[in-house]
Image (cartoon, rainbow, N blue to C red; front, side, top):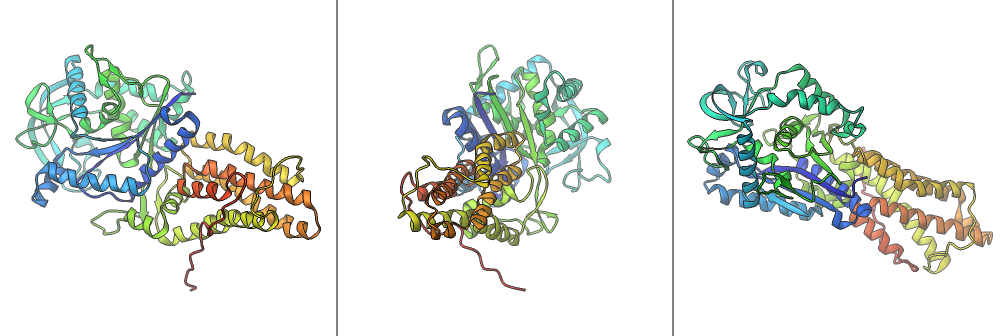
Length: 508
């Protein structure tokens, strides 16, 4: 097992304010970071997020806003930072591609690859999508439309610099498929459907070399190439470098040094499925060309949809994460995003679905268990938590005790593949077992019949369940877990209001 954990989100493009998709990735990364801090210690976990601030779309957005590019990006960056603060995202670092540390590393990486002979200059004639900032080969386009955004392409002829992706195609296929000698390689691209997608693309298409520059005369807003004053760096070659520029640097011998990219570190990238190819094709090849080890996992999650349609500003169906957090609570928003859909699949967002999760899982199950347990401690033991000494449990109680003992290892195994929904389901198994135990044991009858030891064992088990659940729940719902621990106390409870008072819904 790795002794350190380094997790990243994509760096978000600042041509527009953040939306639910950004919050989804960061909440997932935050959960894994918090979870690993519990196991490895705070000092052994690094969580990086940030912003991508170069490129044509940003220059265009700044021009439309009639402000300088730097003024524009500074304003939008604040919106991202404010959102992460609002959602209690615990990132250790926030990188911007306009920072000196990043620019220095990008230029050094370009210089290394250029001197190695993996970058060359050539005249390019082809079809270009300005919104996606991507050149497309004829083989991948129809009707002169962009394969990604389906908008019109522009034919461009210019001299640029190209990175030899094609040289590394066979290496990348072999690396991804080499699971016999390296079983952990099965987690390299996740979920399995995305791994198959990448392999299918690589095995059925010849990789085109990647254009990694733009002429200054067409785009001045970018990192200048170290070997051509007439060109700036293509935004994707620039952006991907952030994962290493934030945590290390190249030494005088062009060897990359970082305590967060050593062999004893588990490196995980979380991205949306729309940028899978950049992360699972471009990035691995860039690292190999630079002589740097690969990440352990590149996980591409799905999209959130509205009525089966992808969210977009043009459709007017973008969900504002701040509004959702204000309306339902931060932890409820976090819980819904991570529980409702397996990470990796597309999900359909609706407020009705949040209310259903709120009233069911959170109010009826978790909230009810905590409140009724505290009420019983208050009623039967004057608010003092019973000791566990010499308490004997019945068969049902012993099964519950085994469940909470097994929970940490089972949750850990599930989170190896970032299956947040299944991990939460496992936590709720213990919650539901405890609630069922209350209904079937009927503690009020134990009290009435003066079964003192049985009642004490019963109440103490419920306390142990709630404490075990709160530890496992903390990475997902930190505020809720802290509230539960505070109310339970060490010896004496501090009962507050119910955690999740039901939301009344209109009857049809």
